[in-house]
Amino acid sequence: MKKIPTVGIVQYGAGNQASIINALGSLSVKSIPIATPSEIGKVDKLIIPGVGHATKAMNELKRSELDEAIRKTNIPLLGICLGMQLLGVRSEEGDTKCLSICDFETVRFNVPLKVPQMGWNKVRLTGNTLFYGLDQEEWFYFVHSYYIPKSSFTIAKCNYGVEFTAAVQHNNFWGVQFHPEKSGKKGLQLLKNFIELC
Amino acid sequence: MLAKRIIPCLDIKNGRTVKGVNFDNLTDAGDPVELAKKYYAEGADELVLLDISATLEGRETFIDVVRDVAKAIAIPFTVGGGIGSVEQAEKLIRAGADKISINTAAIQKPELIGNLADYFGSQCVVVAIDIMLTEKGWEVVSHAGTKRTGIKALEWAKTCEILGAGEILLTSHTSDGTKRGFATDITRKISQSIGIPLIASGGAGLPEHFAEVLTKGMADAALAAGVFHYDLLSISQVKEYLQSKNIIIRY
Image (cartoon, rainbow over all chains, first blue to last red; front, side, top):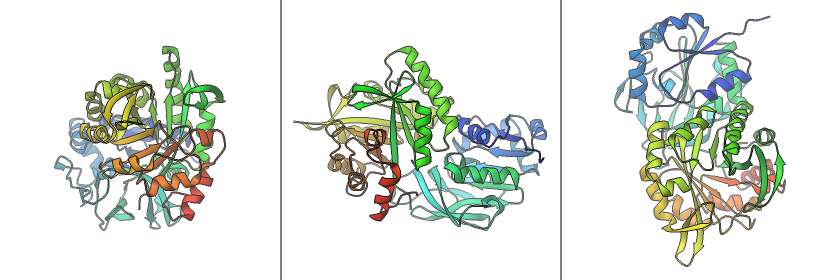
């Protein structure tokens, strides 16, 4: 029988991680909190969850020296929402310097629509491993005021007054702007793919 | 394009779902976790769990319900009912709630809106505004609709946004329980005057009512309790109707 990987959840002072822990729990996956670089050695996968402010998150990652450890890691990592935005070079949120793993920037929505974008939007997916078993278009749940424009890292796109990046991949790093842990069965399928296939 | 959301609301008293019109003649409607699972399976976009317990024991039980619901569903849910402090909100967020809804406490101490927004982020803070049509126009009411405040609905909604609310849950007590449709006009007026999402509530009886409030009323989401509890409508029935009217929904 295939061993089920242990997933580390990167701690950066962001409040609520109950939903990601619950979602992994429903897939019978064990998750442990990661607060120091040495703890990364105990896990097979990493998730950077996504609720909070970019500046606060980066300050906390620097303080714990997890920033450098994340840059160097070669195990599969999934950034969710803010967790994906942190993979870039810079965020307009608080004019924050981010992890610089991928060469993209995060900017604020400047559209004649309500901000944050809150709710379900249709995402156009590519054939990336992360989307195994999903259709070319799927609904996912978003809550965000900042977005990443389309780039060479984009593996899924969405539209909210402007076309934006819904997911990225670069080597062992994946990111999704939406919340798979809150996107019903399709979201759970995506998390399962990350755990079993990526 | 962002989909319009359909949100069932569960009223919970001492850990059990109850149903009734305007809090009268409450009858037991079973285990909230089972009902949450049912709505999740039927395609609800979010849920709202409203604690209407009047006792401390009831409130403690509610936290257990929140914890169990969080494990049973993978869609966002808001909790509300008697939340008056950041500490109370934190217990519920830690138990797995995605958003906190405050109502009377926001009127009594408006700074609570900002305090919650600073602590959890605006996206976690829903201000529930109960309104009633009086001789003064649409007026805000508090204490589950029993007290008039003299505050104008539109002004209060704008103030809530400025103070840090991430979403408004607007309930018309004038139409609540009537099953004759939402208060579309005031919903539209408020929704187009604010830059944050608005959930319309109170008066759902037919699929047409949902369509009206989501188009003419410009609501971002529509909430209902009674019609779903009593199986007068199913979520999929409402969504099929909305889709036939070319309203963007998740299916």
